[in-house]
Picture 1 (cartoon, helix red, strand yellow):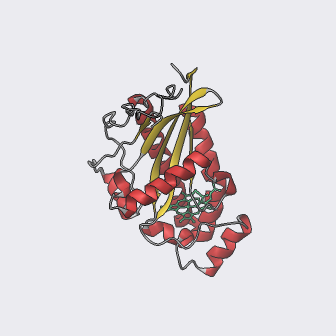
Picture 2 (picture 1 turned 90 degrees about the vertical axis):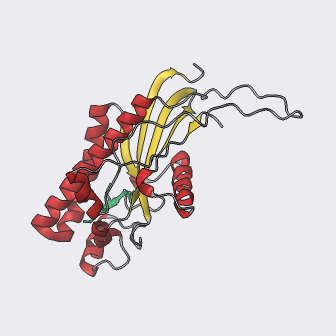
Picture 3 (picture 1 turned 180 degrees about the vertical axis):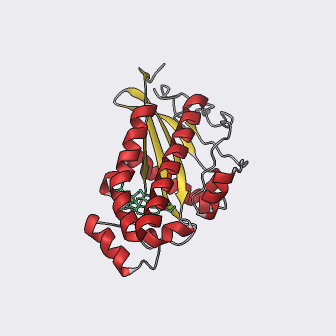
Length: 232
Ligand code: HEC
């Protein structure tokens, strides 16, 4: 089990700004308490197999880290949304592609520095290869897709875990980003040729088109070194 905790939240508090996000298909629930630590009880060893030494990363994510990760994702989402809508209003979709190209990595880097955690976006099919998932992120994205297929809404979904990396404990957190109406212009199934040309010029290896409304477009991802030996 390795200290895995999956937190599923069903309640959402809807604010005016969140309503705008919902209508734009860009909703991320922001203010829930951490779930109970239900998944951390050690498994009963079977009689044949001697009990293994406890995994060094058997610790639960701290509620304050989960809260900080949620807040960082909301900040990233809001900043990206503002940059995108400003650019679309001023210069149309092609301008917004260029703004996204410049602003998205900068915004994520700025927030990461100010919040002392790495915050970004990833996906199984990426536009920017710098956003490609690592093995842990890929596994979570797959798990989100399975949870969605079995009837769970993306809105309340997230996953937090403390993993061991190079002998040290690292807090990791992810939350799905579903496809909304606004996203279709650049990630959907029928992208305007001029928009597609602008995208392909900047991202020759783009894989992030052809998403249906409501599909799993990607996820916010947060990583924070806990600065203590993982076995504590
Ligand atoms: C104007 C075009 C445009 C629109 C509209 C748009 N995106 Fe993107 N999206 C981009 C570009 C460009 C990138 C690559 C940014 C970078 O270089 O990091 C990107 C990257 C992403 C990524 C990061 C993973 C990857 O593929 O590199 C996610 C997740 C994402 N977009 C989700 C969305 C969602 C959800 C919406 C709708 C709310 C949306 N996008 C709307 C252009 C757009």
